[in-house]
Amino acid sequence: MSRIIDRGSRSINFALSAILFNVAPTILEVGLVSGLLAYNLGPAYAVVAVGTVASYVVFTVKVSAWRIGIRQAMNRLVCVRVMCVICQVRLIFETDR
Image (cartoon, rainbow, N blue to C red):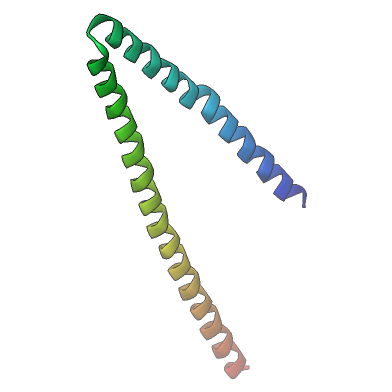
């Protein structure tokens, strides 16, 4: 039970650290840059910059979800194969005994 709680607390710690040190500064930077672009060059440039970053985020999330699905399918296949091998070994052991 303590191992599960420890894993949960490490997961929360990782998520908060990622948000604090990666996501929040990136959002702040994109906001500042788009503000400067809008002020110096016009709002069209700011919209293009924000749109580019947003499309990159959407693409990254979709590709990551696709890859996670492939990885989960591979893990399920590996588990099935391992269980088959375990059953075969056990049957051989039982028949030799």
